[in-house]
Structure formats: structure tokens, C-alpha cells
Length: 275
Length: 261
Image (cartoon, rainbow over all chains, first blue to last red; front, side, top):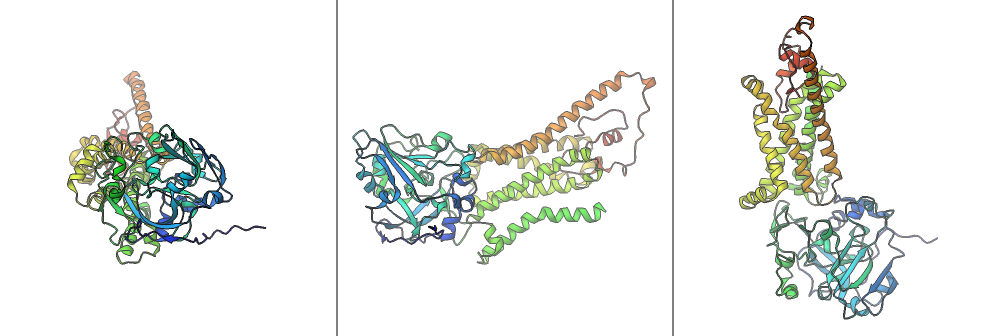
């Protein structure tokens, strides 16, 4: 009989220094023990506790709509052509806390080009698995399941946007979005959708979960922006998880400190309106 | 028995959540992040402490409001002995919740704080609830109660507003999952609803009583000594005690008091 190991397997990768921050990464315990993944419950410790039910093998990803090469793919076939690299990114949650995480993944742009989006494709939409048996949080209508996120195509093609399959050199633990998740470091964490089963190219802006749930509070773009407060709390500062002084707050940077790379994507846009 | 043994036990139980937090903070500050108390504070201790203080404040506030209904429904008059203590512990946790937000979470950032209170409805609701509780805590002594007389009762009705605002504060603060705040709001609605029903019943009883000719009415109950009904003189952060017997006793048996809830 085939046994499935619960210990995350090590991955072969190269370090990408150019796109990595020199800041000290959060510990494995912090990164894997304090998560927002409402599919497993709304408490921060719920995902670590309940995500064991998720079966990530076999895993299928559907790629469809506005692209020349749509289809249903086994995860292995999705991943095969992409060499893995490590990117140490800041992650800024919309709840005003942040971490530094050493992701293992590859550029989303490289995957998108394989599927040849058509000239009508303006956005990429991502969908999380919907299976209340494996994801007990989906038994409650906390959000309109399945979870949907999206990027404008030019954002998705930006070299900082990656698909991650691991962290700290190992496969992703389920609570961090195994087996395949998005990481967009200049946007609030909720944009970085987890456990992806569908990647869809569309002409219309995707109807994303949090923007549908509370349109006044969460926009489609959700770029980290200290100048635009969440209606219920300030976004000017953040608390770095695991900081030696656990009381300290630090200023939040525009685009989470990735402004030099990505600000050009939004030239001419009023970011207070398109928050 | 109750005074001597049960009260100290309840006192220590009420102190437990705070003691647990203090143990965690001490462990974190001394660099012992692996201790049980420190790990209980999780990866974001500031948020965990803030939430723990708030939720215990609300729980104890609702516990205070449940003393009178439970006393009447269970027929266990000595419960009143815990009411002031529960109320003051509720105030303690809510005050710590506020101070933690003020001095730790916002770190003396007065501008942000003022903006928060004005701009953010959930902060406004929570802050108002806290402010309403201050005079109640300040007038929780037997002396204040005697000095204020009937006005004490009126003043302490503010606890109902504080409980409602506390539930609203919790509800507005969550991002999407309203199940937990809904549970607390439901309990508060039950506790306040019980009081409304009791008031209606008393009003009706009073109308019936006044319709009966005085000649055949039973003589009014005699005023009992304060040891018979200490509850009505028992200082408390919550509004008064309110079983029918107390009400008649404190009013020389002349009429039901609708404010005894």
C-alpha cells in the first residue's frame, strides 16, 4: 500500500537574491501556526489545527477561458517545466500585521505564457478548492465559497508575482495553501489565494471574495497603502510578528516596500479610489 | 458559607484569565518564549491580549446581568452576593482592554486614537460602553449607594446600554464570521428581554391590585429589616436586584417597582 508522508518533503531550488529581502525571516512555527485560511476556521490557530484533512495528492488544476491552451492538468504537469527558486518576501496582512517568509516557487508570468492568453484576456482569476468535507470552515457561510481572487493581467505578469509550492525549502504545509498558492507581495495577504484548483483568463474583472463580502472595506486591487485606511482600522503602521520587542509597531510602506518595482503598474490611477 | 468560601473562589476564578496573560507577558519579556503561558499568547501577543481582555470583559458583564434572572429562576437568593464582584471584574477587564489599546496597541498615538474613536464606529461603541461603566464602578460602594438613594438605581440602568454597546462593538469588529458575536448578542437579548417581560408582568399585577377595593385587599407586607433583604442595599455595578420580594420590601409594600430589574 502507498503511504503518504505527513512530513513536508524537501524541494530542490535556487535562491533568488535579487527579489529577496535581507530582513530576518519569521520562524517556521510563526509562519505555519498563525494563519488566515477561513476554509479551516476563522481563528488564527484553526488552519494549523484542521488543515490535516486536506488531501493534496492527487491535485488537478483547470486552466480555461481566454487562452489558447486550456485544459485540466495534474499538478505535476503544471509544475514540471518550472525550475524552483526561493524568494524571501514581506507579507503584509490587511489586519495590520506582517511577516517575512522564504517562499519556494516560480514566476506566475512563466506559467501564464505557457497557456497563451488571448488578446481578450484582461484578468486572471484564481479559485480555491471547494470541498466542505476537507475544508470544514466551508460548512459556514462566512464567505461566499469558493474563495476567488484575481489580478489584472499586467500585474500577474510582473516578475514579483509567484506561484508558491513550498516554504523554508520544504513543500507547503496545508495551512499555508498547499499544494499551490499565489504570492503577490505588494498586495494585502488576502490577494495571495491558497490551494488553487482553477486559473481562468477573463475579459471582465473577477468578482473576488472579500470585495464581494464587504465592498467598502476591500477592493479588487488591495495594494498595500498606508495612506488608505481600512474603514475600521489604520493601515499606517504594522506589527511585525516575532519582533524582538513584541509591542513595537513599524511604519507600513507603500506597496509593502515594493514600490520601485510595481508602482509603474498603477501610473495615472487614483489609488484612494481603486483601493 | 457563601461569603466565606464561595466568594474567594469566584474572586480567584475571575482573576485567572488576567493572571494567565500576566504570566505570558512575563515569560515573553524574560525571553522564555517556549513556556506554556508564552505560547498561549501565540504569534501575535498584542492582539491576543487585547482580544482576551475584551472577551472576558463582555463575559463578566453578561454574568453580572444574569445574577438577577438566575436568582429568581433558581430561587437562590444568595447569588446577589456575587453581583458587585462580577460587575467590578467586568469593569476591570474592560478598563484593561481599553488601556491596552491606548498604551500598547496605539502606543500613545493620540492623533490616531482620537481619529479611531470618531471615525471607526466599533471603537466609538466600545469606548462609549467603557465611559458609561466608569460612574457605575465609582458608585459601587455601600456609601455611594446610600448617598444616592433612588438615583443610584437610575444611574445603574446604564449597565444595560453598556452591555448592548459591548455586543455591538464585538459584532462590528469581526471581519466576516459573526457567529461568536451573535452568540453574545443573543445572551444579552435574553437577559434584557427577561427584564422587559418581568416589568410588564409587574405592571399588570399592579393594575389588577389597584382594581381591587381597598377593603378586601390584603394588608401590605411589613417592612423587613435590611438583613432580610440586603440585596436592595447591596452595592453593585449592575442595576438592581429585583425579585418581587425585594421590591415590596424596599417600598414598604406599597407598589411594585418596575425599576427593580
